[in-house]
Image 1: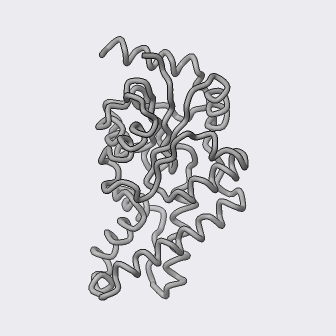
Image 2 (image 1 turned 60 degrees about the vertical axis):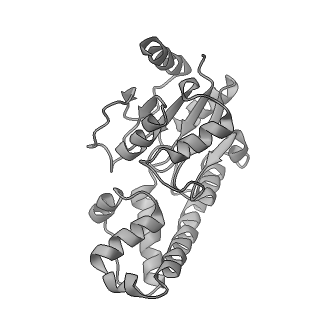
Amino acid sequence: MNLQALIFDVDGTLADSERDGHRVAFNAAFADAGLDWRWDVVLYGELLAVTGGKERIRHYAARHAPDFLARPDADAAIRSLHAAKTRYYLALLATGRIPLRPGVARLIEAARAAGLRLAIATTTTPENVTVLLETALAKSAPSWFEVIGAGDIVPHKKPAPDIYHWVLARLNLPASACLAFEDSAHGLGAARAAGLPTLITPSAYTCDEDFAGALAVLPDLSALTLADLHAYHEKVLSSA
């Protein structure tokens, strides 16, 4: 089967948005709530081992602020913190301070021109995806992606493969007809568990992770061509 679709992760893959985007927004939300929590660059890198913003807050509180989780309204407080964080993050996106990584826009445009279908599989909230695409690509960019799998639409987040299964079902394609793009070992694990051949472009936070099983590990997408994608896909088919 020919290559038919490209499926992209977002944070760290489309944009290097964790350190100077999500981390900054989390800290602003904590300050607004009167919490003395501050996630510095190193700590946030450690917390990225936990996938999902609300899950990350809960994980941190369990280890550093257990009294917070003992509150009867802890679940609601976590949701409120995450909602505030999302508002701050969207404000950062709107300023254009979180650009796409090198080669991303060019590859997406080339894929569209060649008739390849596009999709997204991420744990970030849908609004984060939409605003990033609108501000970094074009106002119409969200419509370029046939399927956008984001947020809490599946019960288990990466490294579970749920989000990729969800996207593949809506594309109505087998994994063998697609290529996935990820930046982390968690993302790679999720994609590979769904049967997807995966290209890795590590971010600053994930460059030392183990990417065994990836089709290739590239510094970014700036040199990647459609011919390269088809060659990678052919390699998968020939080894199947």
